Figure 1 (cartoon, rainbow, N blue to C red):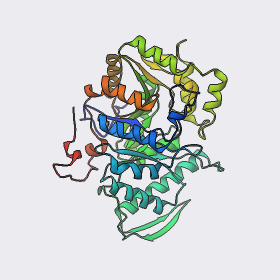
Figure 2: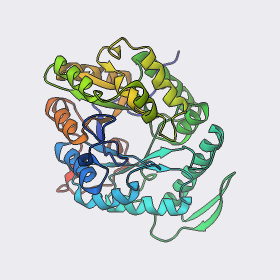
Figure 3: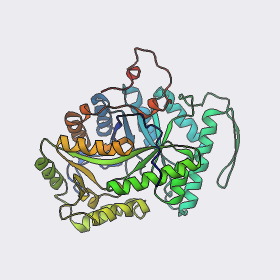
Length: 385
């Protein structure tokens, strides 16, 4: 087996990001919704601005068709209130005509002065049922059109889904001048891996055992090499950290206190992507876990009983959590997207116990996507310890 190749082998730290609960996924107890944590401007902007104040370097603003707020509208509104944090805005390919989507993203990139990253999503739109290959081909075309719009004066594209010839001399190019915002991407099927290998910058994975993560990273590394490229790797995972391991495990059990098997199944199957290959892999690691839900030291899959998608959490005391993160970083993972329940509370706990011990950076800064900032701007500080 060849060695895993990453874009940033020289980096010793990580991009540490948090999660903005735009999709009504914030609560003290899973399966027991409390109006205090509803997905509204007040709660979600508070989570994001808390993460900004505490030193997180990015934050995922997700997208859902069932519930919650519009991602780009929310990001545009909160952007001028931020100081240092990047925003990782999720876009669903095919939802918006690509030149118009490119214009919206470029506008947001200007508002943020380059502190924008994009999470590419390729799920079916409501009422549609494209095959995996068709969905990722559509996403490939959207990405190619976006990149033309951000870097050229004319969009000239003909594909299976789009045929576009359009002058692009108006000021709609991205603020980041060397290729536009970084593209983060998650997917497990062969067409998904191929798309990321050809066009995207950070391959996001959901929690797996370390062995399975290494297999995913090796496969992606080999595919990217076939295109003469390297990608960086990221992990989307939940976090439960307390002063002692016993307290962390108590918090994990408390989070699931209102969930039984029937309720958990109903919650999982609400999601549009509930039957995806990635979700099935999360079910596999739950089935591999012990009676308490741990599939390996400090990796707890119990949270996936009541969530579709990312279905495991790091659970432990600060030293255990830090050791687990260092193991991931030693594997080559350079970006983390954490979340917890309630999101603002867990954001503060991780910032108190673990974040100051991690050397952090912003992926766009480290990959040259940031424009030059004046020395007195917040982003000029670069890497912090």
